[in-house]
Length: 193
Figure 1 (cartoon, rainbow, N blue to C red):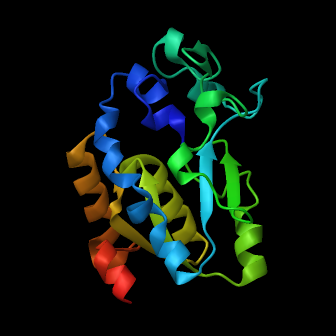
Figure 2 (cartoon, rainbow, N blue to C red; figure 1 turned 45 degrees about the horizontal axis):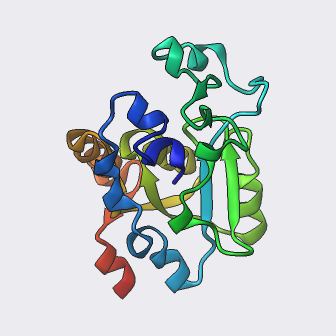
């Protein structure tokens, strides 16, 4: 999870969101322990754009107030731009050595990234998800994974939204129709598996 969306002085808060609601998902115990305990590959993703921002479509750049748009200078650097302070993964969740961190130019994690290649190289077909926000980046990544033939599981305590009703709706959409996108579980159940 990156500072742009989590910290009270960054992009997410500047949009008027209550970022304190996201804190439940970024506890290292909840967000990273399952992968680390199980000894599986852990991938950190960061929504970011190149500095020029040629990889950010106009339709995405033109959303929101002009003073808050992607690429503009915010309180501590340019919004959602690689290498800027707020685009870093929060300190408590910094990737361990030899862990994968992927910069992604969108809500998903497969388009214009090396993620699929990394999974294919390792023969990985089952994914465990966490992160923010449930209804945007997390659900998008799960839908992409489903379209690519992966089985996906979302740890309910490891995801959050600024809007609790959006999280509930996203969990229902993911598991509808017998798990049309994937499944969800409690953290405790995963750690006992």
